[in-house]
Length: 226
Image 1 (cartoon, rainbow, N blue to C red):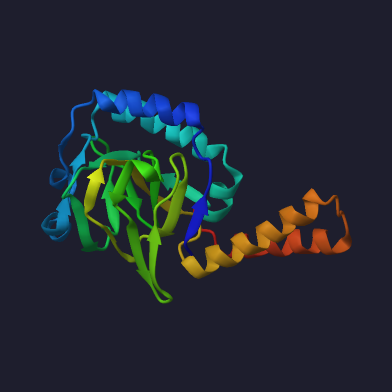
Image 2: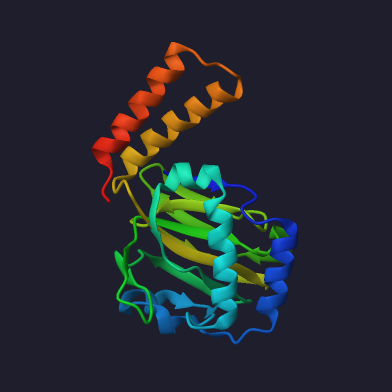
């Protein structure tokens, strides 16, 4: 499942993040890539130990925990601390697949990367190129979202970032270990939960609504890994 989650960060939060990132110490992004990804990666990234990255990461996590669409779609068990990257003219990231497991730096914690996430911090009119392209069974999807918006997609997908031809693209990226490992199962649960919430928003408290809620939780109980 590929999903656009709008307005994860407010305009004010995006502006504050951009100001903090402007004075941060950016490094060659290949220092955090695996062997194969390093061959395709050409960007800048904040170190995982950067105080700016850690502070902004907490802002992102807090926003995600309050976002009902994200929680419903991802069913997060663990969220890898958000990282931050920057692409300038001529930089991009060739086709690759994310590592299956990531270790949180300076800890013994590992995160299975079920879901990849990109949170856009640059407005689309600030740069040309820089589209995230995700390949799945339905073809290639080109993603370029407003600042503060998030895209979720299976971490097993082949994906790339097109080279920048004008301006600068800044984003946060991270991975989620879901309570439900299989993408098809998460997709079904998300669709069912969305339908239930639509019924509830219409003040429909019928036997059907109660029955659907029971089905949702029984499926979640069957498929959850905790």
